[in-house]
Length: 222
Length: 88
Image 1 (cartoon, each protein chain N blue to C red):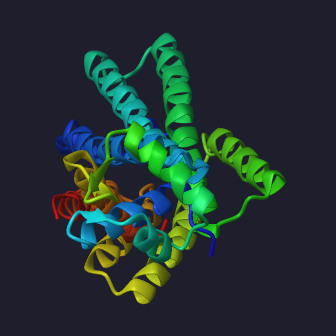
Image 2 (cartoon, one colour):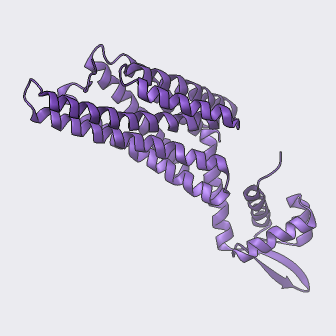
Image 3 (cartoon, rainbow over the protein chains, first blue to last red):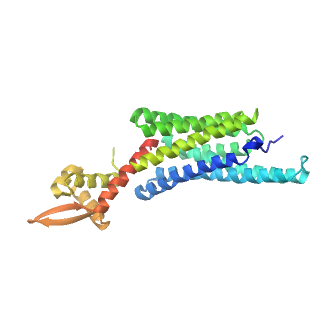
């Protein structure tokens, strides 16, 4: 059976508000990364731009799908007619497929940048893995969060190494914010147990993106 | 490690800035660690972009950094700090 909503009722809409902050953070970084790419014309900065653009877009897909599903379910009686179930099911699959795919590909771009690999075949394999995960996690949502957490774990290790090398407070903030984002994915793996874990995951994620936004604003204000 | 084009441009501009905003070609050649031809190539590009201009004083040639050149060095430093916090 597929669960359409993981959020507790009182949290409807608040999660979308939290995700909006994540979108702002990602678009802020993407825009600056694009500016860097325009200046330096290096491929890795283009990838940096696309990674945050895709992550930002993923939250847009998530918000769009969630809001539509919430309203669809709110308008219907307790026992859903079969036509509504099919409609919501299709919307859920399509919207969340786009969300999961853009999120994972965005993270994979960061992963490729952090691994400093230029192996086209490996990169293609990772992208194929994203597609497979995005599709098959429709029936077991935790798989998506498990893969996202694993990818993010490697990215976090890279940011941690960067902090240890540079000892810069900004590098520490970036590492800490991605640790929170990774932890949110770990918590999301178990959200089927209780809706409170969905709330906890959203709060961790919000904390991560706010910290990331602050660290970027601070470094650019200097 | 080989410098990228943008890094070389930054180094040239910072060298001029550090020498009170204007520098003799020989000094720049020594400080920028480039061949004469390469340095002239970069300088003509910088002059074209309005970041540097050439002036003569008592028969001696100088390269002077402009406001736009100074702004570029600040922007590049900010950019480097931003990328540095991500390790890229």
